[in-house]
Length: 362
Image (cartoon, rainbow, N blue to C red; front, side):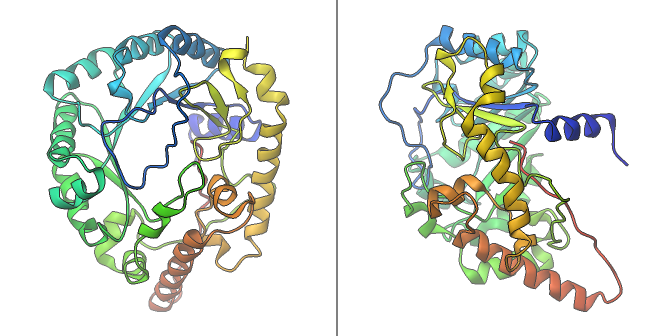
């Protein structure tokens, strides 16, 4: 049974009416994560007024959810001026941060001024040694744990995110327990992606096949993977695989507009546009990715384990040179998901867990 909100979201998705925007306020960061996808070019980042002017254009496009990201957004001295302006324009805010600058007074300030619906923070291990091996910043593990507690004390929802690598795969269960202990949710991403410039070095850190088999099959990981059994995706005919350039868009610190944060095809520059409405309807880039998102959903039906692929067109283009080519790390995950699903069916003969239609809308 769907809710009125579900109906609105599905209607806007089918009509390519955007609801989400991710705004990378800066590429500056106080961490040095070895697999970060950001690739600063040295251009001048937008100043306060340019960002606020851009927010007005997003509001005119009827964007509802605005994510303030980076780099590390909180390093901007004008972050709270930007957040306050965004709230006054009616955006529901999310903040993506590494949490390093969030102490108790900062958490209270975030609540009072930004009042976000959610704060998302990255965690890279269940121990300080593992987390800080990846961030290259001593003390950063304790900072993210304390930041979570401070934000939760203010009633702010916290979602921890963990890219699973061979360096932290043996601490997934520990991180899952830690998240529960501090009152946060946690999402584990088992697909590592290249950097925005195509550098594939981060992909080399992807978790091992032995771990992927355990993660998708063993009951011990049920909470961590957030599903009892890896059920196949069921795509309706003519339905897009994701919301890139359809329900969402992304803006980098230089004002460049992309279909999403992962798919870096430039559709325009927000500083050069009086309004986003014409661009949204007529941009060749956006029209092309919307078409491709429908085609790839059909194409995956012909791929081995295609119904288990958590497919991203941005990664496909960056890594394979083609929006619709299945890339190795998603194929590996799909293989182990499919094996786990088949094992479940053998053990539960006669039961049907059903399929799920899953798509990324941001």
